Amino acid sequence: MPPTETEELKQKILEENRRVHAKEGSLYLNRHPEQTNRYQTRILKNTVRYIRNQIPEREAKVLDLGCGTGYLYLEFLKRGFDMTGVDLSEELIDVLKKNVPKEAKTRSRLEVADVLEFAENDSNTYDAIVLSALLHHLYDYDQAIEQFVQKLNPGGWFLVFFEPLKQDIDSPIRYQFHRWIAQIDEWYYKRAMNRLNIPIFEEDYHLADFQRQQGGIDPHRVVEVLKSCNMEITELKKYCARRHAFPAFLTNSILHTQNTFNLLARKPKLMNQVTR
Image: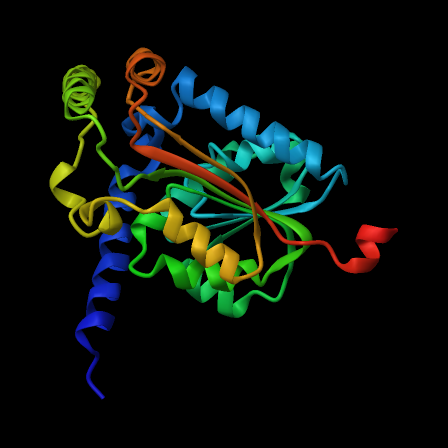
């Protein structure tokens, strides 16, 4: 039977993600300073520290979906976790392999795969599953969440990190200031990329950022999917991410507008674990 329009669209999204991330390669994080500036790094490190405190086992197993070049993966690896990373892009995985410290290589497993195919073929279970800036690349992120929650051990953690927020605009005036700061931030970003001779590839992201093109992701829908899988929501954090730390600080501390969210959920422990 010929593929349906939905199947064709899913395949196009995958292919565009492969193509765009192959072009980004080792420059991926240079092109995405919003993931690594000082403001965002503080959020990341606090989140990883919290999960480390909740999972005291030194080499607990963590799965990083859409690990890219590893800005999240390497933070977990540094804290002693036994890491598995999966990404669609062979080029990004190659960059990450080179950045894994020699002393941590025995705790690092990296695979090039579509995350949904990986879910079907991987028989392992994990103490935590983390994904950063992944869901908005997927046609059906509900399916991905449902499949991977099943791979969590009882008491395991599920982290959705750095996803574009489908915004509710409660103040048009504040939102206008929010947009002005964004425009200034983007202007400085494009100047920096031009000065460093780093291409931006804006025209290549129409399908790769599929959910962003639909206005972002509604975190409450993600909450509903997780709850339907019997997960307990422990934190939903909405905030504003920007290319540079100061505009992010300014927007969050004064305007209190949001364009990004993180979500943390936990799989209930088995009864004998609770009463032990």
